[in-house]
Amino acid sequence: QVQLVESGGGLVQAGGFLRLSCVASGRTFSSYGMGWFRQAPGKEREFVASISGSAGSTSYSDSVKGRFTISRDNTKNTLYLQMNNLKPEDTALYYCAVKYGAMISSRLNAYDYWGQGTQVTVSS
Image 1 (tube, rainbow, N blue to C red):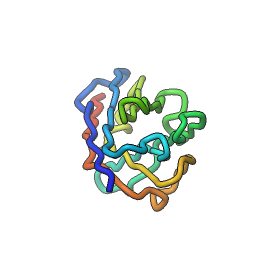
Image 2: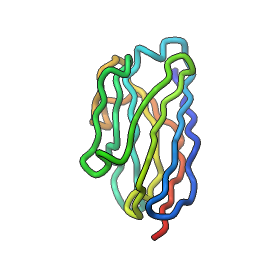
Image 3: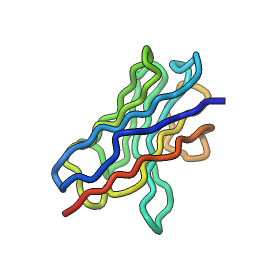
């Protein structure tokens, strides 16, 4: 069982930035691939970014590529999402997720544990 706790969400103006964090329980953090997903009201949950266990591989959705950066600190069991140049369409509930196996994935059903989410709201 892995527990995930996200933080760092909030209200920001368009063009601003936020950094999300996700702390995971467990002693084998570096063996997990991890990802960020988001869900806007009335929409399906969608992939944002993924990172491999060693942080050697990353993947991004086209909508955030060049603006968001996923990273992790395996010594602190923490996953990050640096979000720059935020847009109103980035408004959503952001979830972190962990999957067994260290490889990256953009598929929701590849992930085994999910956090409760942190709200990001971008005003125009």
